[in-house]
Image 1 (tube, rainbow, N blue to C red):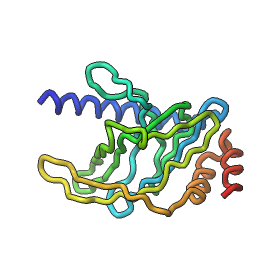
Image 2 (image 1 turned 90 degrees about the horizontal axis):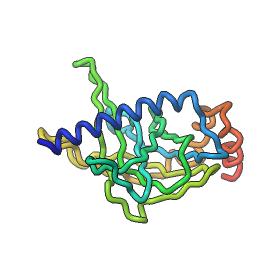
Image 3 (image 1 turned 135 degrees about the horizontal axis):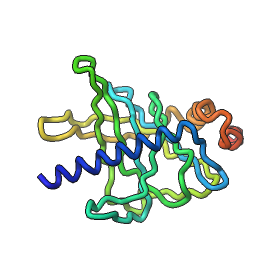
Image 4 (image 1 turned 120 degrees about the vertical axis):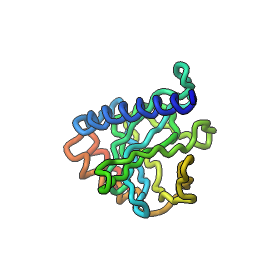
Length: 194
């Protein structure tokens, strides 16, 4: 019972943090002099859910408080097509810990948010490093449901690396989203190299 309660509290805190950062992200477009831009895609098109947000954690994990969960969550803006963007990522090492999806129910007139745990114990192979001014492409993945959710367990899934949409197509989408930002010129430069 304690574990369930602890997990619920941590999940609620992550959702609150994400909501605050996502709202902030829509008005702040980051500073390439001090921050990096990380992007990628998780294609949810074969589900009736959309990508809600993506959690990358600092490496090595530093435990915070009694929960035992790592700190320094970087929350990414997400878009209906699965594109995720962090244009204010602090330099350092990170790994993909989890992502959330949303599903809307017309029957109950509500939305259901689902936590998808990927990795709480990263190895060095799971980690990437970013410096100020970097534009880092994490990759494009397709969400594959391996097993349906059951009464007391969540669905099992896999993320399959795919080629489309590729880096160039995602950069073109980002250019539209970050038009007028300090990142616009750097994105145009990056596109010219592809």
